Length: 177
Image (cartoon, helix red, strand yellow):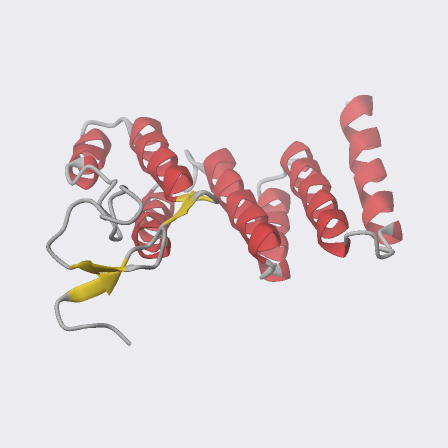
């Protein structure tokens, strides 16, 4: 239960006055979004208007990665950044294929770490790579998926027979072209 005017620090979870800029318990910025430069969105929007689509993506994606780091996981801000990235991708799909796949792989890795792995992200990534006729990216997705599944199984047997066969087929296809 929260005290009136107090919120839990996103790092140490101790209650902190909601107007504090530094947690008196752990010394870090205690609330969601405090580590994000408020001009990030404006800068990304201007970069997009100026035609620097990849630069805008890179700026937002770097912030997203910082906010999903396991040492500092700011789910609220990461969600907002993710929405911005998705919107940017939807406006510029042809230019941001590799970047979109990297974002999906980030989601898989985050899920693997926190134990909430979402196979639908793999399906989405594979579909995107196949539609784009990019077996190199499909291979990247499937190898990442296999590694995540092996990590999640932590010593339990993970049957990757079909997955291994598809990976080998993609490798053969890429090496013969």
